[in-house]
Length: 352
Ligand code: MRU
Image (tube, rainbow, N blue to C red; front, side, top):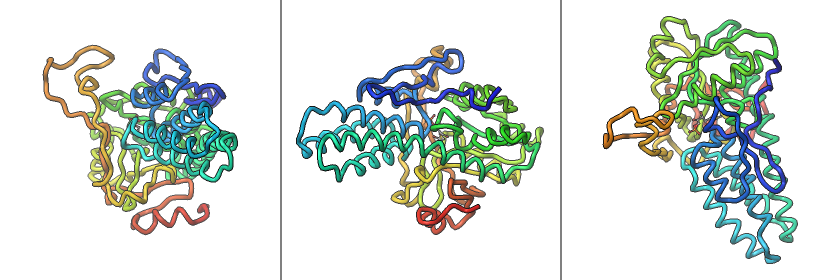
């Protein structure tokens, strides 16, 4: 089977945006059409589309879609509505910086337009460009990440930082797709990732579609699996990387980084430059989304905890920079001294 039997998570269709409904995977492969700004907001907020780059791409299309329908010839009025709709979509989720990055990239792209028509065309082109670029960026992340693994290595991951979380290939999962293309054997140990099971439902499904060797474990099996199965490295994605390298990613990532230190194995973060937020100085400044208690008290709609129990449900945690062996971006692999190395990525050419 070709590596890319995996469906794309987002498609621009001129009059609407089509997304793969990630809430229903893996049992149902359903595509849904988003026609309005509210549809796009709801799809992001309810995790029908999720994963930092995919959220950014979808929001960019959502903003372009809304702007195409502004019935005004006044550029001032156009910009006022664009700002209002940008702010609305930006409030769908707080942690993944790619959402704000993509929306702001559109607003900036349209800033110099000389007419409303030109602004509309620019917004659509910019949104498409974000998606096209992300595929290339993810492939390059995968090439760099692959250089860190030995053939036959067993690598652990959490959540889903795969093809459906991006334009294609994913970030943390990209090296496994590239390894498959090149005939290099790597095995993945995927944590199921409670509460909403992105690891079990999405990562296991994606990797199996592509014929990548994947073993599913529950989150509390991580230490035992590292010890018993000789895991050689851990690789995760990111929702936001602060200037000092502190990294927000799916809840449970911080615990894995502590395990990596304890077992003396490398802990890698794979992410595009669009996930690095130099305006956020440290992890303490990253807003952590807290989601509905039902995600913890229920699994697939079935209650598993007593009615009325207190619940704490943070969707992300922050891994401190000192636990991160390297950050892998499309511009290459950087290790340590992140306060200096992360800003320099934005001006330098790709490392080979
Ligand atoms: O809540 P989610 O499913 O959007 O969280 C996703 C993650 O934490 C991913 O690891 C991250 O966005 C990177 S996706 C390439």
